[in-house]
Length: 328
Image 1 (cartoon, one colour):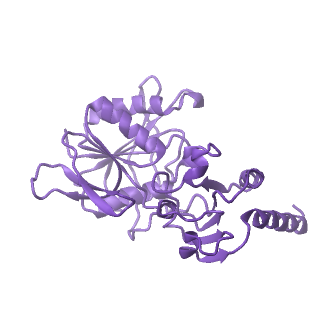
Image 2 (spheres, helix red, strand yellow):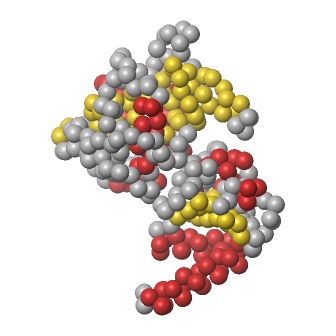
Image 3 (cartoon, one colour):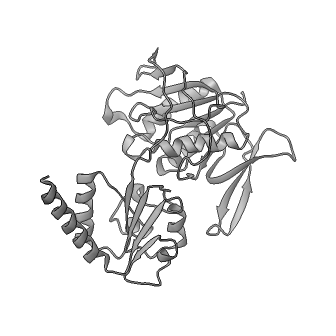
């Protein structure tokens, strides 16, 4: 087993994959001076790494693209089976994944397969200078982020999921990766298919709409139609997942995902501390809520004290008028 770190893409579809977060994740680990050898990257063919942006000091040894014979066969289970085959051969000391729903599922699957421990939702990592046993110390928040717990994995490989940094905000000079991509076919044959060019990242969604309990079902349907027409990402708070209005993959917060759009429009969201953790990296936050004392206003750049359902109707009305004026 070598000291290599393998970074695994945490998504199996391009819609839920944020290349900016993935780049920032790798650069963050590099900035901690924890990458002592070349790294490997593994990702499914259903997503694109064309805009991967890494610090020029990072050395990429191999990039594995896992192919599938058909889109319908791309599942977490089938992805993990291919990951297992690759990891068995390269024998890394550490496997790092972003802590999304898919990422945590992948980590659990691999940990069971390799009979090792897995730590989820890590926020920081340091070397263990006390025992010098090549194991890292991982920090994760507990008690609603009141404390940080230090945790170690006793066995290798260490399989860790990290909470998203939200964006690739580190200052560095990016590089072009000339590494050959190894394409893993469904029948396990390998062919060399080219290289990945690193360029400056751009946020996948400039506008994200967040839906809370103050939004009624009729308005939710209107927003979903709006999101499809204008490719706007719609997310929600935990209660809307619990009442089965949305799937978990739409949940933003401590137990969900972290987002980093240019603008986050928070509709009918009170602003629990768990949700605020998931939106802390948004550039601008616009909050619409009838309760002027709602916690969401404490982090908002702009606050609108209004019924969010009325606000959405007015917003859609304005958009329709703009379309007519432009002749769209």
